[in-house]
Image (cartoon, rainbow, N blue to C red):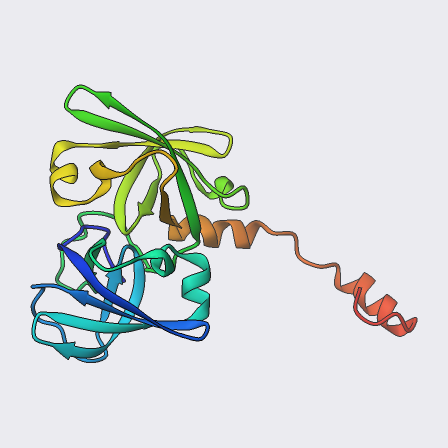
Length: 211
């Protein structure tokens, strides 16, 4: 688990493709890493498989590459890094699993005083999990949703966040890894209608198998 508070901006050294999978090598000064540790890279939870002086490697499965922006990274790309939280860590953001749900698209950037208002579009299947004053993780950064309009939503980037992350350098059309609020996913699952067991059993007895 993570908090969505970026610890460091790492730099991609290379992305080595292996068929549908890949190994990501990230240059970083982030200390305290060990083999097997979990690290959020642009919000995607990866496992450290190799450590070298000033870098670590992590394997990216085909599933990870298909649902995140990691597969589009090239040498020199900056990435948000966060180590897994400890039981004693202050939960300054919100609970972030590092399991990316999909990719949001940046629609516009608007200056508001010394802050920036980012308007984004979520995939249609994820928009119902985004709520005004709820939380989302964008490229691993914990942010509060200020407004929602259909599939669109907006967040505010304060100067501190702009200084410590790469969000201020984004341009309309850029894709970001989106993780919706963990509780929203479970509430939605609990509210799904349960199958009618009696109808299912009757159809099975009639020889129709599973409906």
